[in-house]
Image (cartoon, rainbow, N blue to C red):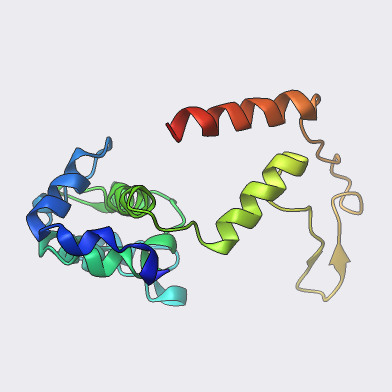
Length: 173
């Protein structure tokens, strides 16, 4: 993924920060006082060592190019806990989104997992297939076994697919 962001080497740290700030959203990385409240509420911090306050700090310090070349900007699950926890209204989740947008705008590719999710959404209307789960008793459960209704995709899949493709075309202009 790192090689894809080649045009960034010609851009100053200040210009990259300005690009981040210009992307529509609530991101205010310059307001961050590094209290860590956003990280303490992060649902994936322990699993992926994703520290929202560190990402925001790197943006503040102008280390944006480094972030755009890393997978850390794609680890955020958009749960919004960091946004709610922040006393300065920095909105780390919006910083992650802005970094993702800048990365794609500068020529990087979407991670494979996102491409799979997009493909699945276009094919079925869901980001993933319905899965069976194993309960604490070791037994496998399905929606049917639990007496839950089956989840159906879009009623008119072709119309849905056309709408999604139209939206992508409009945003890629």
